[in-house]
Image (cartoon, rainbow, N blue to C red):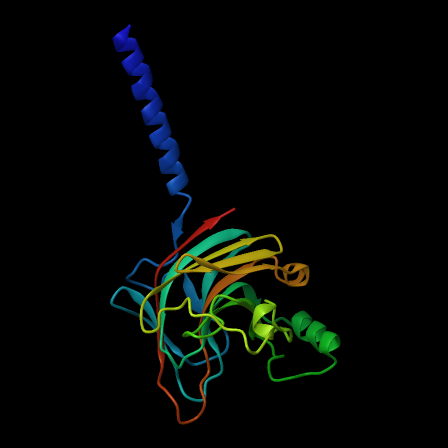
Length: 235
């Protein structure tokens, strides 16, 4: 009887372990630490991306517009985690559900805003962006990169608002959860954004992950930003 009970207990433990292993395997690494396999540069921008010491290393190029290294695969609902270290003087970001502008995108924005501007060009990478910048600042909030909408998160729309969840000059851990029209973000375990935006979900329900090197003013830089331990779990 004891032997039978032990065997049943052992079977249960193995079963639970297998279930846990399967759940853990839901996470997929987006960066192997050695190559840029699975990534490609978006159409515009001249900033440099390469692998340095097990990181994706991005460096500014003076005169270049915003540049993005995009995942080849597209994602809809997901959890995304990564670590990032950014130069104190560089603005950066992580695009989600984003894409290069098609003619339909260009026409829609021109109609919606009533004007054409420098952001409204074919191939321009656009969509929701989770901000990356030094403290005090707006890191972790959601911006409508090249959408003509500016900040999607309400908090940064108050110019006096800022927080200090980013550790300047150090590695910082980001977590992003996108489910339907809701986007939530955390930095170093602290929740930053909890945004529900039906309009941006309607226009961008699915798209690429993008790592940004922001354009810089003439006579400044070079500045850099690096990412590591990038993984995603789809829902």
